[in-house]
Image 1 (cartoon, rainbow, N blue to C red):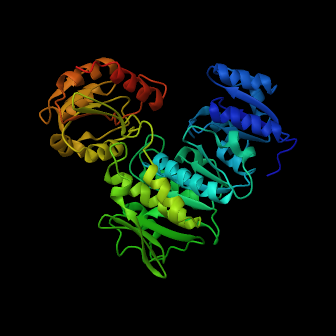
Image 2 (spheres, rainbow, N blue to C red):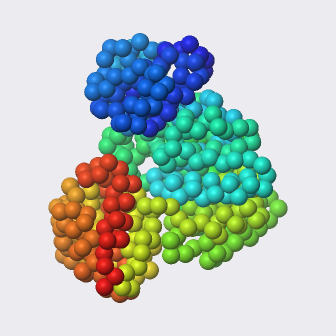
Length: 465
């Protein structure tokens, strides 16, 4: 795509929108930024420093004076601004799409409903270890919180860009092409965006490999029924290499000579030359990084490492030293024999389910937030088995209490701080307190990061006795 001299409207002045605007200006485009709400102080400062014209609290007719538009992933296809742009025939692209046009590094694109942040972080650590030995740099960007566009000009040939991708970002990325793509899993989430159709949601995820070529590789979770069916369909023809991973996938990897498997408690890679043992799960599982779902995330990362030609000590060192990711079953502290765990990133029921399954003993659960159409019946038996008390917070607390009435003891809290205090009174030595909301954060917080930070602050204020 030719950029220099083009007139571009950037719709949405969040992190990714401002980063895209800065990148486009540096590449010679004429940029106008339009934000329906208020632009944050940092965004305003950066736009003014770059002398980029903007408007806030409205979308005026000026935004239609564009050759193409870069649109925030949070703006749904049904939004009036999207409909108006499409009616005028103005192409709409994601910040990811624009940044990729200028990327000289090898791209590892990672998507999925759950596990993409943890998998992305592990892959980044592996590439950092290998890069130190072989003279290249690794960058982690995208949905993880660092816009691709803000870093792409720092990337050089031979570097690796690990790009975490949501379905929203992939919707407007028609030419995006990673060297290695990963799909961790697909379970119901964000279905309000996709009219309740999980196949439409899956189709957005599948865009990650739509432009891959014979020299590129897809790494997918063979334990996921939807993914396994899609990538092993009898008449399916894919122009790229395919590598599967899975804990239950022995015998399912016939579509490719390389498969990353769990054999007992050993991670192994099956190639055309046989089976190679990588390491034991006990070498990387720890209090701050535990659970069967995290073994799956490691399997995915090993698949990426092999696709990039990374093995041996860089791979082992990265996995052995990995301590987990903030807000993802993050161990906060132990107080009087009770472990406190921050799983604020659990914004859907599948993530909550994984956290519950990872508990080493019974726990007090703090859950709730903005409901996404959750069917709590799907985790009722797991909650009965694992939870001694459920404390419900946020907009969904009444729905949660109704769903688990008679299944587990229940309390409601008007704030996260109150919930932490109630949990501290109820939890017994040897138990955990798990903060795994299973809901979006937007009823009480700006994002799950703010929610998780507040939880940790509340926990750190608790007395030791």
